Image (cartoon, one colour):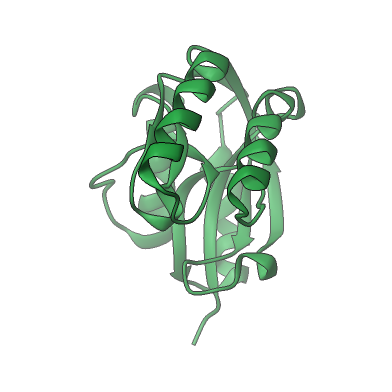
Length: 172
């Protein structure tokens, strides 16, 4: 059986400098695990890493780095979407999702809620709502620049501490 891999769209370092303090603060406040901030294009599938590496250049082909605005800070009861920065499913984000799904799985997009998770794990609803209000003041409307796509050894069944980036391709 193949290992579990994800395809992630990555914010550039300046954008990470905007989001990372929110992530760090939330992780400290709620005692949750830290992780590399990313926007998932394809999550935790049993795929061959060599095949994924071979299609990575085609995923990023003719896609320069781009900006997308945070349209909201959302929360949910879902472990991996507990607290997140939401983006519109349009433009280069949607195109990269479509290309990833077609090349990796020969499938269409289906449901897609592009987001960068800022916190994983269960959090009491009242405390989460208060933290979300603070994060909205800090991050709503912030323009995030995405500059690469990575292949990550990750899935919802692997310990977060074991996740690792296996390959990176710059948008170009």
